[in-house]
Image (cartoon, rainbow, N blue to C red; front, side):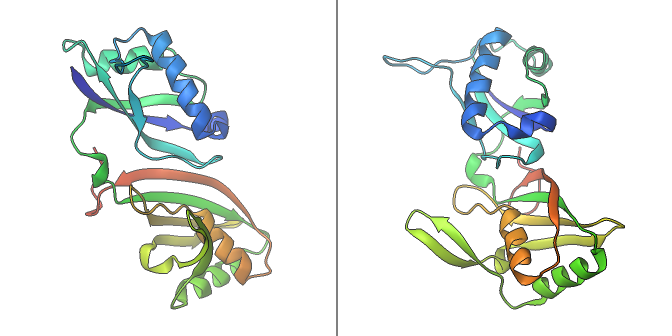
Length: 218
């Protein structure tokens, strides 16, 4: 049995597929592909597969992780990729297929990029810099125990924050994995509360899923 890890992209119209619908979508994709997927045992067998991280609705990504098992040890990774790509829906495609190397617990962070579109880029850039200069950035986050105030600054690493003629573009690392998961909307909401300058977040994209040492999760 081959323990396979596929990296796939989700962009365009596909960014509006929810995580729940993505599960249904992938189930149909496996069935249409004709791949010899390993099925779970028991009274209700179904193809075994799992996603490393859920992606928020409306976000694009080029690095989503899908794990599954193939019962034919002689199949090549290229053949598996091509069979899946032949039946993937619009906006989704397999970028790479390889044998699983690391456990899901090795995931520690994710890299995101996004644009904050505004008519006042100078003012919004200054507001973003002022927010980042604060000793803490407090947000309200929903947890299993209810709404909790959380300081996201210690776990957030800004890689770049630049202004263009129409937007402020941000690249950042945020924690991800089995313990803590943040996404850029937390920072965006904090910025909205700190300034009266109107802006619209666009092109929110997950660029990489990483280990604690910033190496790409494989």
